[in-house]
Length: 219
Length: 336
Ligand SMILES: Nc1ncnc2c1ncn2[C@@H]1O[C@H](COP(=O)(O)OP(=O)(O)OP(=O)(O)O)[C@@H](O)[C@H]1O
Ligand SMILES: [Mg+2]
Image (cartoon, rainbow over the protein chains, first blue to last red):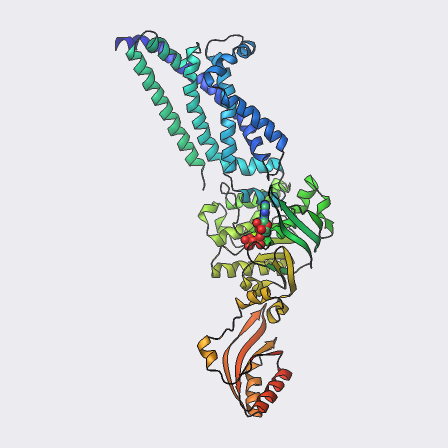
């Protein structure tokens, strides 16, 4: 018990470090992964911006990144991280590789969420003379919203898992704490505390995501 | 208003080539309601989708209101599409938008300024009879109401043409009637040219001025709806007409027939009873009406009756000759 109270300030810092790096990666996923996912979808065969070249190039790059195990991506990206944020340890550094992993992850989810949109609805929009941008903004986006949000939930939860791996090379966060105390010092109490913290965090994100997805769903 | 010349649409897959529409030429006049019927896979939807280039034909020419659609692309094509409304069997409303927003979307797509959108949407919803549903979502509406919303959306930008792909096929008979009545009203009041695809002759009978029958991507017969109903020539057309005008007699009854069986057509008049009683008075034959009815094709009566004529052969012949002079068409079905 005593060790937990001693640990409280560090736990607090670790918690916010996790939130920080996952948060940054999620933002990057939204700003880059989401548009890429939409690009993957609208350039598909039979769709209104059909373009097999763009589709193939984006698809290959995304698959390439996705096929690299995260722990290896982490190491592989160290020079890039150094160049971008000027350091390779700490939550900010960890958020670089987390972001790189999050982009293709979310892009694929966005693509499949967009695929769920009734093709007929898109066709009806084409028939009233809507421009591609209006179709994306006013049809695909709102129609796919529940899927986009639950996809973001899945991404966030996976990123929490990844962030623990980033912890192993000094990325900070709850994972880092768990490994430092639990693995290197065999401190079970800290180990359990961090695990419980992670469980609570994941549950909370899942609950929140489901709630929002349900509220925006008009089906 | 709509002129299709040698329109062909082929679908190429890796293995084979499917011809969806095969060299179709059609002219549909301004203000006309035109029906296209055919079995599943005949190419009706493909042909209709060529009319607003949802499907780009492999070859041929498509003129809508004098504009050659195949010469257009991008912005120009989108503008042309704004004057061609389209409704579908599946309604295809945006489920995350309210009734109001669904209709407003079409106006936004056409670049209508914001302050003009509200009065226009309200006017359209009034036209289709949905003013009390403005803020509901599609999931809260019945099929008929959804189709009304999609009609309002299709009419938003004052199109000259309305394309309907099986617009009533998902609806029950009563709702179908009310949607057809709405389309009729739109045709009459707005002078809209309407193209309707259907497999229900009931729909054609109710509102189409002219119609075409399709099979294997080709138009095999076309004419005024009345001509098609009263005098179909292709076997497939006859089959379609029989879904409404079927005068098959039961086998058992046919076996007991001793006289001549004739089918009498009354086109555009309601004189059947008078003429039949005339015949029975003037000739010493017995007449027995076994089957028949009067249908109204766009409010013009079409009567068909099956009658058994019994008597001396010469008298019977004379009676039938007399009928030939008095009724639109006489078919001798069996010679007794
Ligand atoms: N996108 C497509 N790719 C390949 N083949 C197609 C495509 N669309 C239609 N076809 C084929 O073209 C033919 C005509 O189809 P179409 O949908 O026009 O028929 P339809 O008369 O509308 O039938 P239904 O009454 O079932 O709607 C069919 O053989 C169909 O399989
Ligand atoms: Mg069809």
